[in-house]
Image (tube, helix red, strand yellow):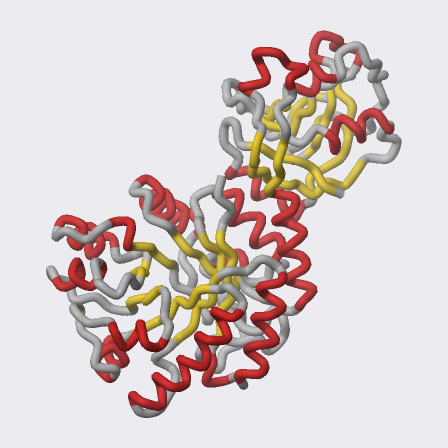
Length: 389
């Protein structure tokens, strides 16, 4: 399983190269591999732009990262590039050319199949353009897509629209990049606006770790890029923590015999739900909740709950006495465990999706943090999840 690629954005006309170097040194130390930059916002002659970005790409490549240069038609022609000659971008050191425009004819296919080996990235909304280019002979493996970011509050598209287009490109096996946003005061994009740079409007004021976790839960995104500069080291640490919770190498559990092949193992991607624990939870209940690495629902009854069933096999024979609960009904986001009063299913971890009557057969373990309840909407059959305090 490939992990999503993490990226940062830089707007070099606003920042000294020394600052850029320090920022990329930090970003690369936290596993970031891509740098998005707006090339057309840098003023100067052709020679000045080339010289500037040569210095910029040297820094990026020094840290083992790749450069995605955002290019509009004015810059493309100012640098003397054509669909048959991207040598100027090769000279600069650009690895990926994000086209902010298209030719809308067979030249797009020629551009995508360029001899310089530069990958062409287009807006996720360029569906007809990309499809026409492929029909004209463009190699799909040379194409990637990237969402826009939205500096102005309330202008980003709906989550449903984003999800639909992500699924479209996933079905075509064409990569999708999306932007999340630093909440650092004064962080910026290419324009004098400091209101975040997300792709999804709901992310604008959300802590960056939660934005990342949500994008990973969508399961249709290949690259996640911080849209504004500069993110703080605390934000990089939050992202690093989420990535370590999400991607784990799980050994095959031979104790399950022939069933071991059906249980997630190897490099596994999980959704880590932050949980607020109930008072009175036992050490055994904590062990079952936190130590089992790959909770998942088989998908046959995702109605009132998500069921992690393998835990009842591992902890078969362990006693889980009924604990009293002050609630009359469990509600969406409650996490429960089947107790001794339903011994056949004892030890099964469940996440409540709809109101369920408290009948004494389950103990309340805790509740998914309110800020992450919306992620439940994206959990599908056999998706793996886990719990963190």
